[in-house]
Amino acid sequence: MSPRLAALSVHMLTATGAVFAMLAMLAAVEEAWSMMFLWLVVAFAVDGIDGPLARKADVRRHAPEYDGALLDLIIDYLTYVFIPAYALFKSGLLPGWTGWGAIILITFASVIYFADTRMKTRDNSFSGFPACWNMVVLVLFALQPPFWISLAVVAVLTLAMFTPLPFVHPMRSLRGRALSLPVAVVWTLCAAWAAWDDFAPPEPVLWGLLATSLYLLLAGIVIARLPRASRPG
Image (cartoon, one colour):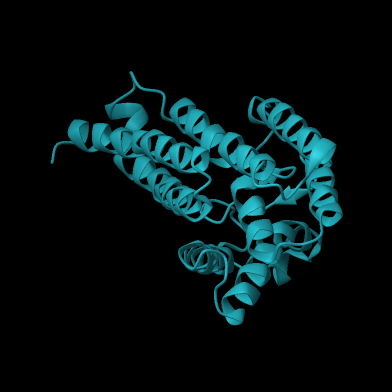
């Protein structure tokens, strides 16, 4: 395969995320939450592999007319923010005014975060919570906590987007990648299993989903505070 064709193929792979977003939205409109999250997990997996492939194919050199970063951000906003926010509101996990408050907070704050040129740190981690609401909402669906806990989670993570706290990027963070990448794979498998079982999976899967979610949420903060020689990865 020529370098040009390889680069274009990576762009096309990234673009499939828009198709998965549409399929997820159609499922959400029908309140088929398990199917919606399965499509979002597929989109999440594509998002995890297209970046390394883009760097390997050197898309900026061989297919510069397409902005892969912009393409990625458009799809990420749909799959990470917009559709999960709709599901959180429509599912009734946050009833009444709490649902309205959550979707306004999530959609408004996240679009500002996505446009922030300071969202990445020098080691390719995220500065502030990276608006991964697809992951958060899936865990809330699986655990079904009281609404006030869900509301508190939304409020705290929304504020965390605009802090200098570091959050790992499993594929790109220089520190901790040797552990973060396998954890992200386990999270994806647990998430897919939970959605496939209509959010009633075996208890070990729920514990795995919770444990990997907490790791991905807190690892960047913990690693940043470790002496450099003690940091994993």
